[in-house]
Image (cartoon, rainbow, N blue to C red):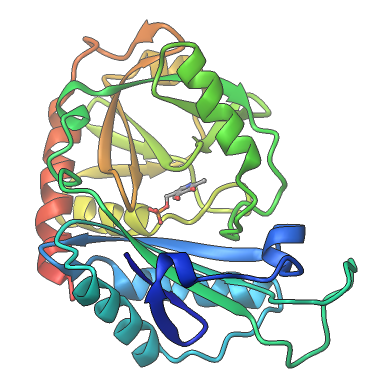
Length: 284
Ligand code: PLP
Protein backbone atom coordinates (compact mmCIF):
# COMPACT_ATOMS: atom_id res chain seq x y z
CA UNK A 1 0.00 0.00 0.00
CA UNK A 2 1.18 3.50 -0.83
CA UNK A 3 0.52 6.04 1.92
CA UNK A 4 0.96 9.79 2.21
CA UNK A 5 3.15 11.32 4.91
CA UNK A 6 4.04 15.03 5.09
CA UNK A 7 4.13 15.79 1.40
CA UNK A 8 5.40 12.45 0.12
CA UNK A 9 3.96 9.20 -1.15
CA UNK A 10 5.75 6.07 0.01
CA UNK A 11 5.23 2.36 0.73
CA UNK A 12 3.60 1.94 4.14
CA UNK A 13 6.72 0.25 5.57
CA UNK A 14 8.69 3.44 4.99
CA UNK A 15 6.19 5.81 6.59
CA UNK A 16 7.65 6.62 10.02
CA UNK A 17 6.54 9.21 12.57
CA UNK A 18 8.61 10.51 15.49
CA UNK A 19 8.18 9.04 18.99
CA UNK A 20 7.87 12.69 20.12
CA UNK A 21 4.86 13.32 17.89
CA UNK A 22 2.02 14.82 19.94
CA UNK A 23 -0.45 12.59 18.16
CA UNK A 24 1.38 9.63 19.67
CA UNK A 25 2.21 11.08 23.11
CA UNK A 26 -0.89 13.20 23.82
CA UNK A 27 -3.58 12.03 21.43
CA UNK A 28 -3.25 15.57 20.07
CA UNK A 29 -4.59 14.96 16.58
CA UNK A 30 -7.74 15.18 14.52
CA UNK A 31 -8.94 12.91 11.75
CA UNK A 32 -11.48 12.27 9.03
CA UNK A 33 -12.66 9.10 7.31
CA UNK A 34 -14.06 9.40 3.80
CA UNK A 35 -15.60 6.61 1.77
CA UNK A 36 -14.71 5.73 -1.81
CA UNK A 37 -17.22 4.07 -4.15
CA UNK A 38 -16.55 3.40 -7.85
CA UNK A 39 -13.12 4.96 -7.32
CA UNK A 40 -14.72 8.29 -6.35
CA UNK A 41 -14.67 10.19 -3.06
CA UNK A 42 -17.93 10.70 -1.19
CA UNK A 43 -18.83 13.82 0.78
CA UNK A 44 -15.45 15.46 0.20
CA UNK A 45 -16.60 19.03 0.93
CA UNK A 46 -18.32 18.05 4.15
CA UNK A 47 -15.32 16.20 5.52
CA UNK A 48 -12.94 19.01 4.59
CA UNK A 49 -15.19 21.62 6.24
CA UNK A 50 -15.35 19.58 9.43
CA UNK A 51 -11.57 19.03 9.38
CA UNK A 52 -11.06 22.80 9.14
CA UNK A 53 -13.42 23.29 12.07
CA UNK A 54 -11.72 20.61 14.23
CA UNK A 55 -8.32 22.19 13.52
CA UNK A 56 -9.60 25.67 14.34
CA UNK A 57 -11.23 24.54 17.61
CA UNK A 58 -7.88 23.10 18.72
CA UNK A 59 -5.85 26.06 17.41
CA UNK A 60 -3.94 23.71 15.16
CA UNK A 61 -2.68 24.89 11.79
CA UNK A 62 -2.20 22.95 8.61
CA UNK A 63 -1.59 24.93 5.46
CA UNK A 64 -2.73 22.38 2.87
CA UNK A 65 -5.28 23.93 0.54
CA UNK A 66 -8.56 22.34 -0.53
CA UNK A 67 -7.03 21.63 -3.95
CA UNK A 68 -4.03 19.95 -2.35
CA UNK A 69 -6.32 17.80 -0.14
CA UNK A 70 -8.34 16.65 -3.12
CA UNK A 71 -5.18 15.92 -5.07
CA UNK A 72 -3.79 13.76 -2.23
CA UNK A 73 -7.09 11.85 -1.93
CA UNK A 74 -7.23 11.22 -5.68
CA UNK A 75 -3.56 10.30 -5.92
CA UNK A 76 -3.99 7.69 -3.15
CA UNK A 77 -7.06 6.25 -4.87
CA UNK A 78 -5.07 6.01 -8.09
CA UNK A 79 -1.83 4.62 -6.65
CA UNK A 80 -3.71 1.98 -4.65
CA UNK A 81 -6.28 1.11 -7.35
CA UNK A 82 -8.98 1.78 -4.79
CA UNK A 83 -12.45 1.02 -6.12
CA UNK A 84 -14.33 0.69 -2.85
CA UNK A 85 -13.15 1.46 0.66
CA UNK A 86 -12.06 4.34 2.85
CA UNK A 87 -9.45 7.04 3.07
CA UNK A 88 -8.16 7.82 6.56
CA UNK A 89 -6.72 11.29 7.15
CA UNK A 90 -4.99 12.43 10.33
CA UNK A 91 -3.37 15.72 11.28
CA UNK A 92 -1.44 15.84 14.55
CA UNK A 93 0.19 18.84 16.19
CA UNK A 94 3.53 17.40 15.15
CA UNK A 95 6.85 16.67 16.78
CA UNK A 96 7.08 18.80 19.91
CA UNK A 97 10.48 17.57 21.14
CA UNK A 98 10.54 16.89 24.89
CA UNK A 99 7.19 15.95 26.36
CA UNK A 100 5.33 19.06 27.46
CA UNK A 101 1.65 19.80 28.07
CA UNK A 102 2.05 23.19 26.39
CA UNK A 103 1.62 23.34 22.66
CA UNK A 104 4.88 23.51 20.68
CA UNK A 105 5.98 26.89 19.29
CA UNK A 106 4.03 28.39 16.42
CA UNK A 107 5.41 27.21 13.12
CA UNK A 108 5.98 23.62 14.31
CA UNK A 109 4.77 21.65 11.29
CA UNK A 110 1.84 19.30 11.81
CA UNK A 111 2.17 15.62 10.92
CA UNK A 112 -0.16 14.78 8.05
CA UNK A 113 -0.91 11.14 7.29
CA UNK A 114 -3.38 9.66 4.81
CA UNK A 115 -3.90 6.09 3.79
CA UNK A 116 -6.47 3.93 2.05
CA UNK A 117 -8.31 0.86 3.30
CA UNK A 118 -9.85 -1.38 0.69
CA UNK A 119 -13.35 -2.74 1.53
CA UNK A 120 -14.79 -4.44 -1.56
CA UNK A 121 -18.25 -4.88 0.03
CA UNK A 122 -18.61 -1.48 1.61
CA UNK A 123 -21.86 -0.54 -0.13
CA UNK A 124 -23.14 -4.09 -0.28
CA UNK A 125 -22.60 -4.88 3.40
CA UNK A 126 -24.68 -7.95 4.37
CA UNK A 127 -25.21 -6.40 7.83
CA UNK A 128 -27.39 -3.74 6.22
CA UNK A 129 -29.85 -6.49 5.28
CA UNK A 130 -29.90 -8.21 8.66
CA UNK A 131 -29.55 -5.17 10.89
CA UNK A 132 -27.24 -4.97 13.87
CA UNK A 133 -27.62 -5.35 17.65
CA UNK A 134 -26.42 -2.83 20.20
CA UNK A 135 -25.92 -2.50 23.93
CA UNK A 136 -26.15 0.78 25.85
CA UNK A 137 -23.29 2.13 27.93
CA UNK A 138 -22.76 5.34 29.89
CA UNK A 139 -21.14 8.06 27.80
CA UNK A 140 -17.80 8.55 29.56
CA UNK A 141 -16.15 10.59 26.81
CA UNK A 142 -15.00 14.21 27.17
CA UNK A 143 -17.46 17.04 26.54
CA UNK A 144 -16.23 18.27 23.16
CA UNK A 145 -17.43 15.38 21.04
CA UNK A 146 -18.07 17.80 18.19
CA UNK A 147 -14.29 17.88 17.62
CA UNK A 148 -13.16 14.79 15.75
CA UNK A 149 -10.04 13.87 17.74
CA UNK A 150 -8.17 10.58 17.66
CA UNK A 151 -8.94 10.02 21.36
CA UNK A 152 -10.89 6.85 20.69
CA UNK A 153 -10.03 4.69 23.69
CA UNK A 154 -13.50 4.78 25.23
CA UNK A 155 -15.27 4.03 21.93
CA UNK A 156 -12.81 1.13 21.48
CA UNK A 157 -13.63 -0.17 24.97
CA UNK A 158 -17.32 0.13 24.14
CA UNK A 159 -16.94 -1.87 20.94
CA UNK A 160 -15.03 -4.55 22.83
CA UNK A 161 -17.76 -4.66 25.50
CA UNK A 162 -20.39 -5.05 22.77
CA UNK A 163 -18.42 -7.85 21.16
CA UNK A 164 -18.02 -9.60 24.50
CA UNK A 165 -21.81 -9.42 24.91
CA UNK A 166 -22.24 -10.99 21.46
CA UNK A 167 -23.53 -7.72 19.92
CA UNK A 168 -22.25 -5.40 17.21
CA UNK A 169 -21.95 -1.93 18.73
CA UNK A 170 -22.74 0.36 21.65
CA UNK A 171 -25.01 3.37 22.06
CA UNK A 172 -23.93 5.93 24.62
CA UNK A 173 -26.29 7.36 27.23
CA UNK A 174 -25.85 10.56 29.23
CA UNK A 175 -28.33 12.11 31.69
CA UNK A 176 -30.86 9.48 30.65
CA UNK A 177 -30.70 10.25 26.92
CA UNK A 178 -28.88 8.61 24.04
CA UNK A 179 -26.04 10.80 22.75
CA UNK A 180 -24.71 8.77 19.80
CA UNK A 181 -23.21 5.43 18.85
CA UNK A 182 -19.57 4.54 19.53
CA UNK A 183 -18.68 5.77 16.02
CA UNK A 184 -21.96 6.91 14.48
CA UNK A 185 -25.03 9.11 14.82
CA UNK A 186 -28.24 7.39 15.87
CA UNK A 187 -31.91 7.69 14.90
CA UNK A 188 -35.27 6.17 15.65
CA UNK A 189 -38.42 6.08 13.55
CA UNK A 190 -41.88 6.37 15.07
CA UNK A 191 -45.03 6.67 12.95
CA UNK A 192 -42.79 7.46 9.95
CA UNK A 193 -41.14 10.36 11.76
CA UNK A 194 -37.33 10.33 11.93
CA UNK A 195 -36.05 11.36 15.35
CA UNK A 196 -32.38 12.17 16.00
CA UNK A 197 -30.54 14.14 18.63
CA UNK A 198 -29.97 17.85 17.85
CA UNK A 199 -26.43 19.15 17.24
CA UNK A 200 -24.38 20.44 20.19
CA UNK A 201 -20.99 19.77 21.77
CA UNK A 202 -22.45 16.45 22.98
CA UNK A 203 -22.18 14.65 19.63
CA UNK A 204 -20.08 14.62 16.50
CA UNK A 205 -21.73 16.59 13.72
CA UNK A 206 -21.87 13.70 11.29
CA UNK A 207 -21.34 14.48 7.63
CA UNK A 208 -23.57 11.54 6.73
CA UNK A 209 -26.18 12.85 9.21
CA UNK A 210 -26.26 16.30 7.56
CA UNK A 211 -26.71 14.87 4.06
CA UNK A 212 -29.20 12.23 5.14
CA UNK A 213 -31.44 14.79 6.86
CA UNK A 214 -31.29 16.96 3.73
CA UNK A 215 -32.26 14.04 1.48
CA UNK A 216 -35.01 12.96 3.89
CA UNK A 217 -36.45 16.48 3.96
CA UNK A 218 -36.35 16.61 0.14
CA UNK A 219 -38.27 13.31 0.12
CA UNK A 220 -40.95 14.99 2.33
CA UNK A 221 -40.11 12.79 5.32
CA UNK A 222 -40.82 14.24 8.73
CA UNK A 223 -37.80 14.91 10.97
CA UNK A 224 -37.58 15.86 14.64
CA UNK A 225 -34.22 16.80 16.19
CA UNK A 226 -34.36 16.05 19.91
CA UNK A 227 -32.89 13.61 22.42
CA UNK A 228 -34.55 10.24 23.09
CA UNK A 229 -34.12 7.52 25.69
CA UNK A 230 -33.19 3.85 25.29
CA UNK A 231 -36.77 2.94 26.30
CA UNK A 232 -38.22 5.17 23.58
CA UNK A 233 -35.83 3.61 21.05
CA UNK A 234 -36.83 0.09 22.11
CA UNK A 235 -40.49 1.04 21.64
CA UNK A 236 -39.89 2.71 18.26
CA UNK A 237 -40.84 1.21 14.89
CA UNK A 238 -37.26 1.28 13.64
CA UNK A 239 -33.78 2.38 14.62
CA UNK A 240 -30.63 2.97 12.59
CA UNK A 241 -27.31 4.76 12.62
CA UNK A 242 -25.25 6.71 10.09
CA UNK A 243 -21.53 7.10 9.50
CA UNK A 244 -19.24 7.76 6.55
CA UNK A 245 -18.17 4.13 6.32
CA UNK A 246 -21.50 2.39 7.13
CA UNK A 247 -23.86 4.88 5.41
CA UNK A 248 -27.28 3.98 6.88
CA UNK A 249 -27.21 0.88 9.11
CA UNK A 250 -30.42 -0.60 10.60
CA UNK A 251 -30.42 -1.47 14.31
CA UNK A 252 -32.84 -4.26 15.24
CA UNK A 253 -32.05 -4.88 18.91
CA UNK A 254 -31.12 -2.63 21.84
CA UNK A 255 -30.11 -4.14 25.20
CA UNK A 256 -31.74 -7.45 24.30
CA UNK A 257 -35.10 -5.88 23.31
CA UNK A 258 -36.12 -5.99 19.67
CA UNK A 259 -36.92 -2.71 17.95
CA UNK A 260 -40.28 -2.95 16.19
CA UNK A 261 -40.58 -6.42 14.67
CA UNK A 262 -36.87 -7.02 15.20
CA UNK A 263 -36.23 -6.92 11.48
CA UNK A 264 -34.89 -4.25 9.12
CA UNK A 265 -37.66 -1.73 8.50
CA UNK A 266 -38.77 0.09 5.33
CA UNK A 267 -37.68 3.58 6.37
CA UNK A 268 -34.08 2.50 7.01
CA UNK A 269 -34.02 0.57 3.73
CA UNK A 270 -35.35 3.54 1.80
CA UNK A 271 -32.97 5.99 3.47
CA UNK A 272 -29.99 3.74 2.77
CA UNK A 273 -30.97 3.58 -0.90
CA UNK A 274 -31.51 7.32 -1.16
CA UNK A 275 -28.26 8.05 0.65
CA UNK A 276 -26.18 5.70 -1.52
CA UNK A 277 -27.77 6.97 -4.75
CA UNK A 278 -27.37 10.64 -3.92
CA UNK A 279 -23.89 10.44 -2.49
CA UNK A 280 -22.65 8.36 -5.43
CA UNK A 281 -24.05 11.03 -7.75
CA UNK A 282 -22.27 13.78 -5.81
CA UNK A 283 -18.98 11.86 -5.49
CA UNK A 284 -15.91 13.45 -7.05
N1 PLP B 1 -20.28 10.05 15.89
C1 PLP B 1 -19.07 9.56 16.18
C2 PLP B 1 -18.65 9.48 17.60
C3 PLP B 1 -18.21 9.14 15.15
O1 PLP B 1 -16.99 8.65 15.45
C4 PLP B 1 -18.66 9.21 13.81
C5 PLP B 1 -17.81 8.78 12.69
O2 PLP B 1 -16.69 8.39 12.83
C6 PLP B 1 -19.94 9.70 13.56
C7 PLP B 1 -20.72 10.13 14.62
C8 PLP B 1 -20.48 9.79 12.16
O3 PLP B 1 -19.90 10.88 11.46
P1 PLP B 1 -19.73 10.82 9.88
O4 PLP B 1 -21.09 10.62 9.30
O5 PLP B 1 -19.17 12.16 9.55
O6 PLP B 1 -18.80 9.69 9.59
